Amino acid sequence: MKMMLITAIFPILLGIFSIDENKINRLKTEYGSININGKFYNLDPNFKRGKFSVAFPFIVKRIFEMLFGGGDERRMCKFEFDKFDRRIYDKRNPSNKITWIGHSTFLVQMDGVNFITDPIFSAKAGPFGNKIGSKRYTPPPFEIENLPKIDFIIISHNHYDHLDITTLKKIHTLNPDVKIFVPLKVKKLLEREGLGENTVELDWWDEVEFKGLRIIFTPTQHFSGRWINDSNETLWGGYVIIGTKKFYFAGDTGYFFGFKLIGDVFGPIDVVCLPIGAYEPAEMMRPVHMNPDEAVKAYLDLRGKIFCAMHWGTFDLSDEKCDEPPKKLLSYVDSLKLDKENFKVFKHGETIEW
Image (cartoon, rainbow, N blue to C red; front, side, top):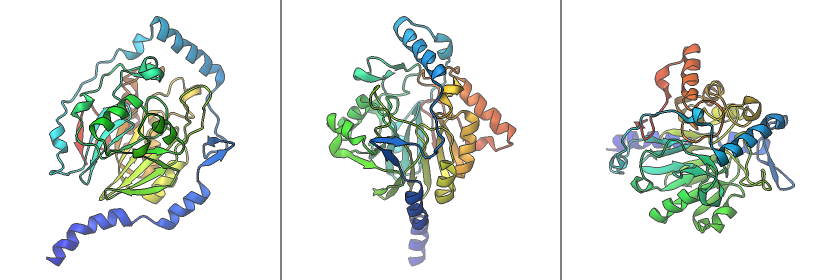
């Protein structure tokens, strides 16, 4: 009986307690968040945003399309959907699962705990109650009411396509005790929307335990802002979540040396969710959005096992055609002679066990 008990709990102890705390403390000291005069900065001292000479005409073109139409050739993609059955998330059958809902939204079950990443079910990603903003050209594979019970939400940063107040309020209404984990300085926004009581702010390398899982907030290379006058006033980042297995979610990011830092401490990581879209025009996007080749490099740095592609095929954010990112991803994987079985390009609504 004792041997059976030891056999049962050993993987849990191994997963939760095998991380070197001294290494995490060193990372906090050497690679903690940087805030100067109320503005956050990326870790790379040479980081520069994309060229204004490229960004300005891109933004003007997008505003013109928003007002008068256009750009349909980028969005003319027909994607397959998988039928979602919430019963597979029954906690009496707590195998680890992950479902791609679209963009950066994954529904995940780890050790019987359900959480969702950067949830957005809205038709537009933008201000004024989603009345304006980037259009969603691929609808969610199911209604928000079909979600199973959600224990917690992780938010990577405050951009509208990652922090959608409309969606958060609906999830909270359906799950009044849901916990929301956000980067530093984001809680104030949620407090204004009546969600502050459920919200926990995290700095880079901060760690909390929730329902038996360890949640660690980690650096990414990106920026924040919801209006023209609040650039970088709130932090951005990704998450490592540790139970009997390990899960990583990047949110939005450019490629940077931080992936190797994370992989050295937390790797190997069973599932890594990495963005592969919104990379054109490269002169504007590359500092803050990885292309598929860079996402594979990040996966290798993280010492990932299963690569879950995200941040493509859902919202009109950039100039590449909507179905280009996964093609480039798998082509690059082929060129490196990596095992394609480890690189998952989901159908919208598709679920896998891990």
